[in-house]
Length: 439
Image (cartoon, rainbow, N blue to C red; front, side):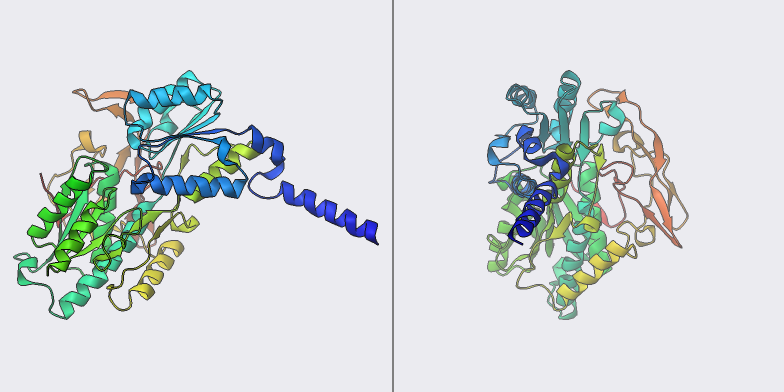
């Protein structure tokens, strides 16, 4: 009997070693893996901290030790990225990841130079058309959690409006509540995000108008704070953001403490530490989901998806804890909306929920061609050119030719812009009504 029990234990132990993130690769396969990590910031900056946390969690999930991770922190979007990649190859890394959009060209060049090394450019947008089989892009469907964070903001606006607590100066001439948004750059990623946030608000409270101001930097505490202050000076009652610091939430808390009616929706991390009553929530990425998928593919010797994009369907996006002053019923509403996104009954960019008037889409600069709008302002066609151009020259130079595909899809009677399905990186760059980009 003891021999039988021992045999069973041995078999169980063997199975446990084969099952899990490493699959049939076993411990030897895990020891061979060395991952190079090029980070645009460090753990003091929200966006990079979210990546660092996700990578470490995924490594733990997959049995990859700390000494198999080689970190390069605060690498700018310049030739410094090339240098970092070269050093990581020399260190024996066979998988190299960069986390910023501006690293993309340098990572692509490195992929061409080192065909035996896999390179992943997070948030990049042309791996699938580059022809480089060892070059990959990935991004979450964070627009989904931005929409949900907009629902949280909309609930608060409705509560304030119903209670008569929104100052008269915070309404436009046509009685719409003013909302502000601090954006980093006028890229499709930011446009997609702020539009999703705005549509989330409108799903709860329709009479809103939003102003977007750009800092032209992903991370700048002072600029983000100043942008938030300018928006509050224009009497915006909610300040959202697609920028990586705590500058805007901290500015909102200071103004709120001095009597201003204002609330903050952050990004990447919980902002309650700097905006204890002003912060409502933050949309965030659960990067460990992607990195676990990536590490598992590498360990198992399986194909890496060249364009990876998942959202609430894989719990790859979320919102952070709700702040103490969210509207009553917010938690239940959030759960309802997330369930709708998961089951397909809620589409973030449902064309029934926004209009576009005038020819305000620049097909050349915004990568959108031949958009069609009916007499009611509804988008009926939105072809997306998936080619990659160099826009630093005039006219733009074609680098990689991609197909042109229509981003609109139908789900029964509903038509919606299907974001992050034609490629992982966002390509929604339509300028919809009631949102104004400030210069």
